[in-house]
Image (cartoon, helix red, strand yellow):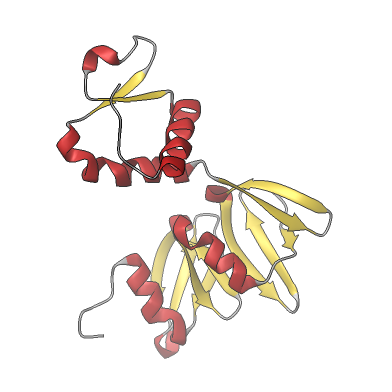
Length: 174
């Protein structure tokens, strides 16, 4: 196995997640991959191309510990559908689980979840972009999102531009 020059903590975190979750070996020599493992074999000169792939794979199984009204809850980030502020309470809607009330402000959750493809769509909503099934135009320059679970959320006019930028669909003249 060869050494990769990365921030040590970042690489150790990514490598351990790859080994435990995907049973992968990183190498530049195909002979270094045991028969019972899957290997990512690449040329050292392509390291800048492989890093985003490894980062994405590590993020896919990332978990967070969030404080709820009944204690701390560990949740896979990719299972969070959206977060909704209703008064002073923040509701976290999760795949196949009952909604949970989170004891953390929405703006802090927005910063915490931004690296995991979450985007603010209104004063009271943050949505997981990977959970969007359809995007439709709505009245007054708003967007209607249909999520994979059938939920409909509205992207407020003041958040449409940032939402489109996050998806990479913003027109240059906008």
